[in-house]
Image (cartoon, rainbow, N blue to C red; front, side, top):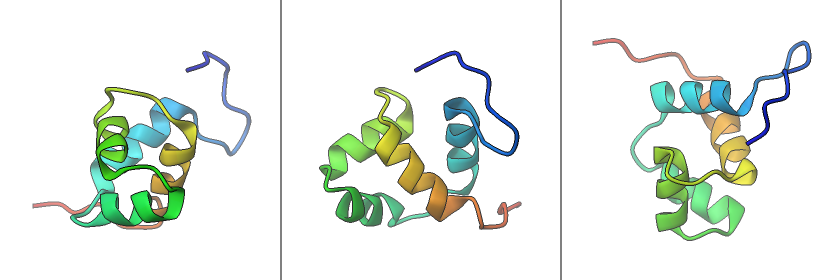
Length: 72
């Protein structure tokens, strides 16, 4: 992870992870795994924060960002 400041209009890695955590849905990990070519266990570990992988996070962010936050 780099500590660079995000340029205007772009999200940092940590900001993307925050958006993903709030909007991820059941079944998304399998879709991300199929689109990126990584194993589902790797995708799960990246999304839980155990490892960092920009490709997986970017794909997950593309899926999750347009969604509305579910409130209960």
